[in-house]
Picture 1 (cartoon, helix red, strand yellow):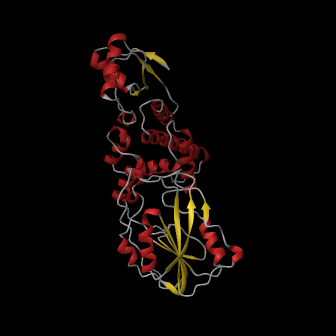
Picture 2: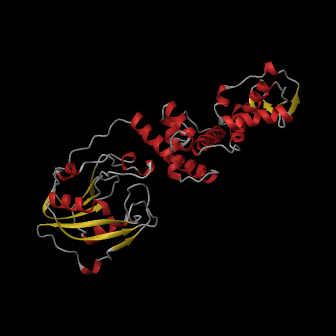
Length: 371
């Protein structure tokens, strides 16, 4: 890197690089102008050999506004990719970055580096170097570890989805962040899903009959404390009567295990009865993390058990405690241990899961989010 006496009018702005620069607030920019006006320019403006600004976009603009002639230093790079990484990593030192902005910049770096590795190995074959699920997962974990702000891998994954799929106006709101009049990553993710993904249609219920039915209905709640906790931002919900009116393909003698929350307990009994079952007992799932609430902060959910006809109880040797302690995972996901409990209780059962998001051997899964 070397200093140069290049003329101010010969310096240009690369729009791609400028777009990576987090905007100053009006107050912060005024402070920068005042500092340069009173004390001169402390840091040189970095440019490349084509006289494009790499670092110092705000300083250059402020110099022009207060009629101070800036100093420039030219920096050389072996490749365009190396130059891009420099621009990005320089901006990652900025204190005013929102989480989404930081993910956006770090993702760009990781993708450039991945492309370089693939080129060195000669294995690109025209494919995106990060297109596999394994690679996406690794990138998500790497970015999560490097973030200077606190964000879970799931939040990072949602930010990446917005970066890759959202219209520009949604990205702009995400870059602002919800503390600057913009949107949280949760809201940006939800709005992106609505904008780019077709409405998912619920498939018809299975034609067969089942004697072990496991269900996690998409209850509709009449309140929410924060946008990220709003149920409708995570999956489509159903009205109580819609759930009650489902024609469940249950056998004459069958069992129903129905997930509910404390606030939906009365409605859940209504559903259980409407589907032809009689309530018998329940299990409590105690989570490792506390939730929200108006009277008590929720830390558990209920798995109601109902019987239809003459369904036999399981062998006493396999009975489990009525309390299951298991960590809370992604939104609405239930402990996988419950599958194992059900299968140990009823090893020869004909299993049906309603409103499922998973796939599992020997089960029929029904829902519009089955992976």
